[in-house]
Image (tube, rainbow, N blue to C red; front, top):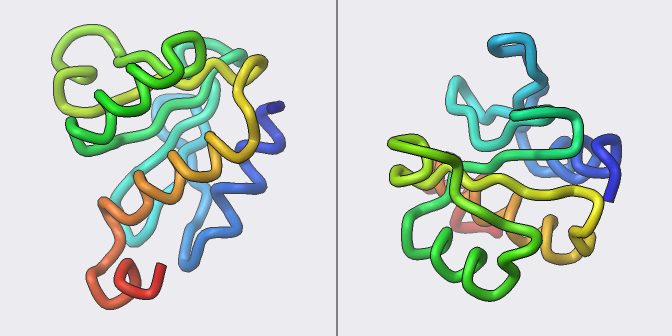
Length: 110
């Protein structure tokens, strides 16, 4: 998966906008960020997952998903190694991260 593919998948989710934060593109619903591109470098994406979901993704595909270092990772920030990620896995993970921050009325539809 390329960074552009990641961007397209994120922007297909309802009510998502792309903005910039600390020099990196991020993806938001409302003011809540659920994904970032290019952190820690251009080979990676990052999503915010509930801890239980982070554990599932990292256990199932440790070469693709890994917790961010430190407190960010302990709170669900999960890095995605884009070059080895299957599009379906990233789509599912982005949807999970999106649901976690989307308003209930919207998340219930997906």
